[in-house]
Image (tube, rainbow, N blue to C red; front, side, top):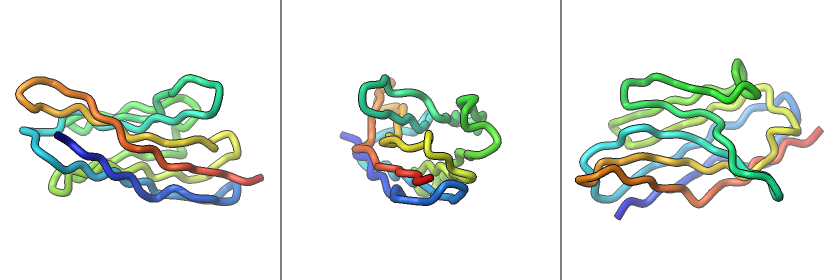
Length: 118
């Protein structure tokens, strides 16, 4: 079993910054891709950014140049640095990891609320 613990959400004014963290624990051989998604009520969950085991990154167009995803393999942790936040970034943010447990398995964090006030 794999557990993900997210932290770092909160309330911030437009133009401010937040850093989200997601730490994985449990039994797995290795972590493959890691990513962040977000969801607002009534809409589908959408990809914000992801990072491969080779540190290749991919971002949604709406966050390019403002958000940075990174990972610390020694801590099994993925980060999302969010700068120049906008009210439209308000959402519940979920981390997502693909791990090798003998086969490829996908896990989700519990979600953390990010609210950006105008």
